[in-house]
Image 1 (cartoon, rainbow, N blue to C red):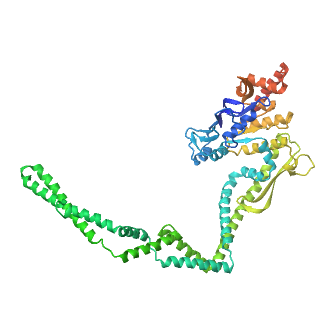
Image 2 (image 1 turned 120 degrees about the vertical axis):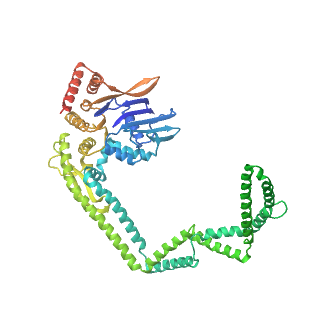
Image 3 (image 1 turned 180 degrees about the horizontal axis):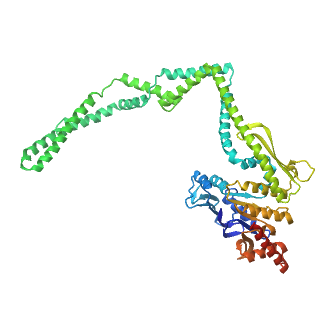
Length: 559
């Protein structure tokens, strides 16, 4: 759950820090106090919005930081699969804007904002006016049904993604293979030319490296002969050469080694040097004798290297790559030579992939059909609880024209708001306030199956009052039994259900308007309820009504 929010230099907020608790966290305040800034800041931290329009222009930096506590083992596993450690059970998301550049971090490590968004999708849901409006789009209805059926449907959806990729690839290969006889003959001729050209060169792996070494030796033969010859002269020929010098030194030491045992060891060492130098001179002499070559040999190496380099420039950057290219083209050549068989094989692969995809889609459709009825009944019951007493809700399914990773099902939420009227798609009959309650009903149903620990409801009270508001408040309290809920509201009925009540307010500090937030104790919470009920003038009667409302809410939450 979300345990801490830290905001700095965002719009009217200079700096504030809030510790949220379990259950229902209610945020209230006067219109314009900064509730939208708070939700906007959270969206910035989650990577859903940019700092534009929120960060204060007169500040060098802006910061939003969220601290989550993760206790759910299943959720911890998902987060760890992303490469994020959850050893202490805490996840810290932060985004900082400095000199126009934003930096995103998870547990202090800089990450792409895309990872922040992915992680946010596991930790928190925000339901505002935009999310309510999303119910108007039928493409989202399938997602809601699949979320409801995910326990049984999840593996099939994963399989569908794999099967669809295989189907697309098989279809692509079949389309690319289709050609007329002239195209086939033209490609055959070109492939045969390439294969013959490479085969004629009789390439051998590693040959280019061997020849390059020979070429370097031949091209530098004169300098090698001069320098190696001089080295040989210094060690074995002419007056004062190394061999003679070592030999004379050896004679001197042998003459005196009998007088001191220590000299015997030194004599032995010099003897080894003399032997090594003699071996060296023989090897160098043999090398110099074998160094000679004729120009025709050099020309052959040069011509062969030219052929190899031409092949590498044309078909690959190494002999191995050229041979692999030849093998690939030989395979393609064989396919085109037996074109009808090749095409028939591709057609069979395509047909098999399509059949597998369709079979998986049919299984998904059967599961969706069962869960659509369950979801319809459960949402209908929740809508009645939310004071939709005469509505008739149904999750309708039919088979669409296209087959994809999610199958072929088309799902549409339909509702009749009044007895005797036919059910129609939500977009045709539901108002903004009705959509917010329908979304709440759906979320209540999904909450029992949802791993999401924290839910934020913004503008859930749009267009409602009286008994309906009371029903909504009871539903919010019910969801908060198994989830942490943050709710911004203008209604006293909803605010009275708070387990933790926060007041957002504006004040003037140093000739500047700033937004602050503070947690209210029980007495202060009742005063805030009175303000919501009575407006600017709070009377004893209003306070008494607010107190009674709070007591009724506390009693209702016990059951």
